[in-house]
Length: 116
Length: 261
Image 1 (cartoon, chains in turn yellow, orange):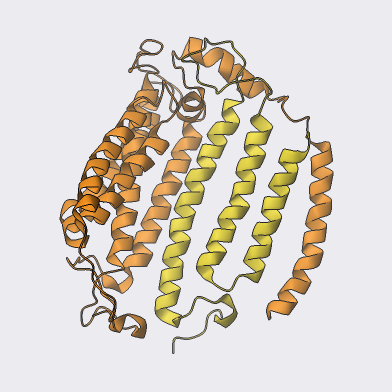
Image 2 (cartoon, rainbow over the protein chains, first blue to last red):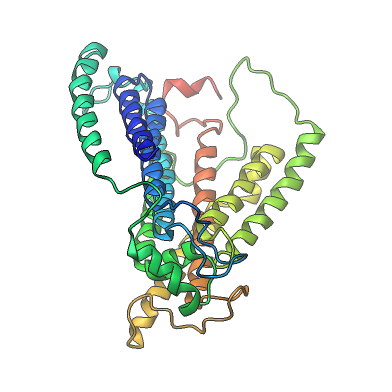
């Protein structure tokens, strides 16, 4: 049980990398990249977790009651924002690639080829 | 490099990754017993020193406010780059009708869809505003509430169709809203410098614990982030929708879209 969270994070990173390497479509590849990124959410939340502690919101229960690490939760929030904006940027790049090359298969794309 | 060689190269890489991950996993601290003094200190001190009840907001908008300013700038930069890439040679002009594929049947929206979208879009926007405003008290904040409020724009498109959503969502207004949010955040970080405080120092009156106004500068920064996120996601939605518009002679030269005219 002690190592399960870290194993899940490593497994998510592994399957994400496998998906990226074997991808046949850029949109699928971007999805695999977000799978890799979700490994960092699991890792950060796992680091901040504490047995028997509540959310770090002291509204219903008074300050001083055990709560999980708020710094890790803030880092996950940052992570999600970065992930969302990067996904939008990569999807825009995929659209432009499709407009110019009419394919999104990484196998059929050659870098820096002059436009035909 | 074909698929086979990619897999051959992947295998040793995954083996190395697995060994490294095993080393790290065995060296990690015990699960459920965090050692971070930083988090414990924030939990202990922020309710007393800042009068806020949401510790995550206290970390994001006060303790690490400069980091969040950097994150916010990164969000705005990524959105700007996306808009530039999508506009391409299309330019800034907009049309009022979406593209249509030959042979695809055009279905009328049902009244139930329109009604539900109108009800849900307003409710969702208000709920997003609520989550933003209560960011320092209850779970939520500028980033989460902004994303919720901006998803109401998708419902406007779903319920009202392309042309009405274009009339309601102006790219210029959304971009200005995004910039305004970024500007207010930057000012909240810089203005204390002019009065001899540290950057992003909490200089406003702190307000009361559990009150709508609690946390001083955090309230301003939280609202600025919410406004900026609404603007960013709105701009992204409008620009991605514009990709579905019917092409006009001169602004498209790719074969894949010509059949949509």
